[in-house]
Amino acid sequence: MKFKASLGQGMTEYIIIVALIAVSAIGVYSFFGKTLRNQTAGVTKEISGQNSETEIASSQTASGQASTVADKEYNLGNYNEGGNDASGDTVD
Image (cartoon, rainbow, N blue to C red; front, side, top):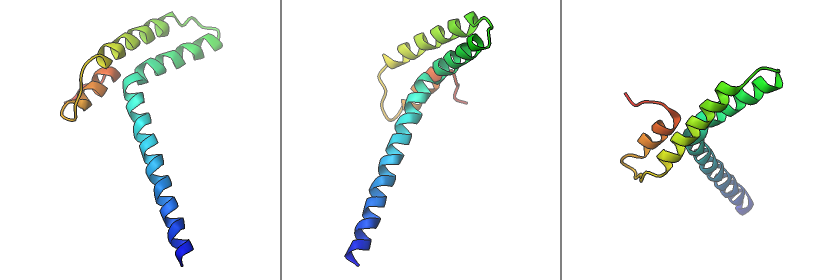
């Protein structure tokens, strides 16, 4: 019986670790998502033989915005504002 209890504990720890990684990934994507989408679009256009100057410029702009947002101080009261600023989303 003791063996089954330790298996459940290991699974619970695994679920907590996976959840923390997922939350971290969501946070990173909220700050750099627009940059990543524009870079991916640019690479896709270049692979297909098209010009991707527009996507590269958009990616550079988004990167600059993310850098500006990263310099601001956030706490639990205004943390969501930073993610929305970096991703280009607005809060209604």
